[in-house]
Amino acid sequence: MYKRVRVAHCPGVFRIAENNGSRVLGKPLLRSGALIGGPKFWEIRITGNRNNADTDNDRHKIPLSLMASGQTEPQQTTQGQTKESQATTPAKDTKMRPAQEQSMKAIRVHKFGGPEVLRLEEVPTPQPGPGQVLVRMHAIGVNPIETYIRTGTYAYKPTLPYTPGNDGAGVVEQVGTDVNEFKPGDRVYTARSVSGTYAEFALCTTEQVHPLPANISFAQGAAIGTPYATAYRGLFQRGDAKPGETVLVHGASGGVGTAAVQLARARGLRVFGTAGSDEGRKLAREQGAHEVFDHRAPDHFEQIMKATDGRGVDVIVEMLANVNLGRDLTILAKRGRVVIIGSRGRVEIDPRDAMQRDADVRGMAIPNTPPADWASIHAALDVGLENGTLHPVVGKEFPLAEAAQAHRAVMEPGAVGKIVLRTEADK
Ligand code: NAP
Image (cartoon, rainbow, N blue to C red):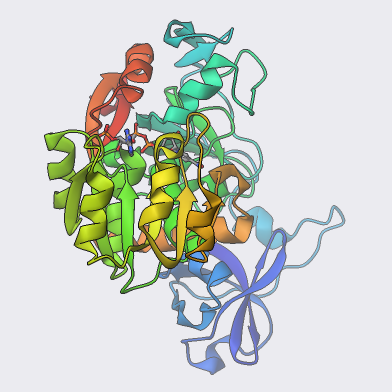
């Protein structure tokens, strides 16, 4: 990543001046003499992950290297701009590609209801404002939550009409004012969006966009946002899963489950996974599950308990709590935790099962994630994607126009990875 910034040499650190003020990015890896003489403008190359620098108290590990000579501190003009910025800082106007389309195809919902309310329409292409990025979508992730929202019965109810979707992957088309992190042509994946991702273009803030490594396809990129963030938060931020512990991924064949298996295995946990089909169990094993079970078999809880020699599992990440929570509590180890990721109804539990084990039942909803936790999640995911530890599994694929079929498919049993929509850009 390259960006033009003002670099002030402070004792022991680089302080990077940006539009929103200055912040510390890292200790200088340069000879200190290079920056003597006060703040200067430099082209720098950020070779570490910027999010790491913000969140991990690990800032000293971010290597910075100068790519061009510095220039002297710019003088203020009467308008508050600098002569320097007129000449050399990124253009204040939106950076556009000449072939920018004025309209695009998008799925629109005009009334809440069944899958048939998802309609492909021609709508104006959104334009990025300050701090925003327009992404040309190649592939779009379909999540169960988008079906709940579509019915109008979910806690979150968007204003009609709206374009669904948070997840997707593609190429940066345009960036708005003040965007230095991305440039047109960058491969990215989205995790949340301003305008909705079921479209040929999606408007996002810079925080909602992440670099897509070259080894990850666009379809795989569409499988990252919600599923991997949910799996990471469920396992580590809510479930406190630690290396050496045993985790049960209860529903290991879908988008969140396959991500959870990969993440848990990479962190050094003993991983149990369940699926309702032979194909799903095969997939869970391929993703790293040490043992797999059939969650349709009435005795699978006994089988899991037996596999732990009667000790129980430390953490359960639960995809269908309304079916399983009562019996989950009976197979927990002492001080075990159940993290409720998915539930589609009510359930009866015996509180004594929790009392006897000092067990916790912890709910989570990914929109509740605080900003600092989001940054940690994506710092971890970006590294895992880059080094090949994480490799999203794509299941069924549909053209964008067939979003209704994709919504039907995501609610059917027999998951095998992530369901994605493809746009014309991916042909
Ligand atoms: P998905 O790709 O459709 O996968 C659904 C998973 O649930 C499959 O592995 C499926 O297995 C499994 N399942 C079905 N019956 C089960 C049972 N009796 N016991 C255990 N697992 C069972 O959906 P997803 O994207 O992975 O999401 C999974 C759930 O988490 C959904 O309910 C979704 O709404 C929820 N979710 C919640 C959050 C949050 O913030 N809390 C975020 C994302 C997703 P088979 O098909 O093999 O039977």
